[in-house]
Amino acid sequence: MGGGEGALKGYLLPAITSRSSADAHGPRARRRRDEASIPTAVREAIQAFVPKAGTKILRAKPSETSFVYDWGVRVVSTADTNAPAVLMCMTAETCRTQRLKIVMPGGKTSKVTLHLTKAHDVGSDKTASEEGRKRTRDEDLAVLKRSPLFRYDPGRAFVLLETLRIVNNNLPFRIGEYEESLIIRDLMLKEEARVALNAKVIRHSVVEL
Image (cartoon, rainbow, N blue to C red; front, side):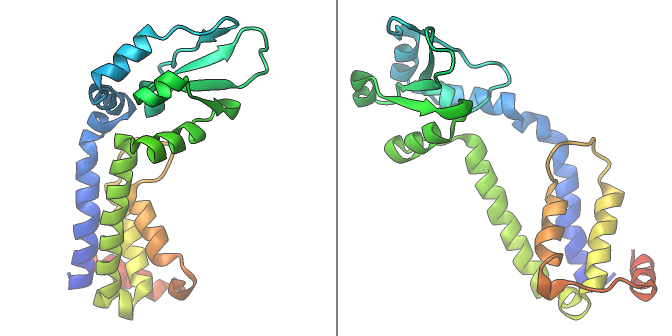
């Protein structure tokens, strides 16, 4: 097997085997890590929070795993059921004193996330891990693009990538894409890399595998 194919397998196989520990990095585990990093003052402020008259606290459901609920209290109106929920920020003394509230239109957390990131430099483990995976994927892309296999025969590279993904990916179906799918998309589906797959290309790739 040539150096190009070896580089492709060297990328794909570790991605497959490392997935067995995915449960340790799932939403619930990530939420527990986020909660453990919350300062005591913030946790105590959340516990002691008393809503104003005409409002009530709406706790996060088990399915709502966003880190924003660890840094504030979600409040809804008891008089107007159509009014959007707001999150009372408990992250810093200034926000607690001013009773700063951030509107959550449609229940979305994007405005709260923006406030926590810009005002308090607070983010989630999920965001950090996703950025780390993207950096790693970009580095792997650069290596593959420099490989002789991709430069001289991108069609064969595409077949090898797809074959390795199908053969090795014996994991359960999930919503979203695996790293192998992302690397194929980023490497092969750009205009300059579109290739014609014919019997010759596929036959050579099968022999090499």
